[in-house]
Length: 115
Image (cartoon, rainbow, N blue to C red; front, side, top):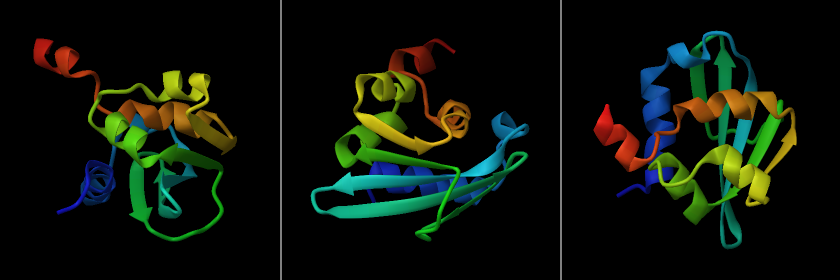
């Protein structure tokens, strides 16, 4: 069984296109840290077309996040920008791709129920 963050990135790859990112062109490398190991996800965005791979390549933005926090992000229990401001997520390189990408994380569980 895969963890929620792996499922999130795999689902993003399956979708292939994200209308919320239609004005975005760039790359983001997520490094999900779990103890001494690191899961890497390279997200390539070309005006909404999204490709996800496990390559360890350079990117416009590198986002480093603890495994437990990554799970809270992809389940809507944490807000990416709030965690960046708290210093729990580090972003190297350009911040704008991360700001735009955070739209893909689900909102809090109560907000989803009200829709």
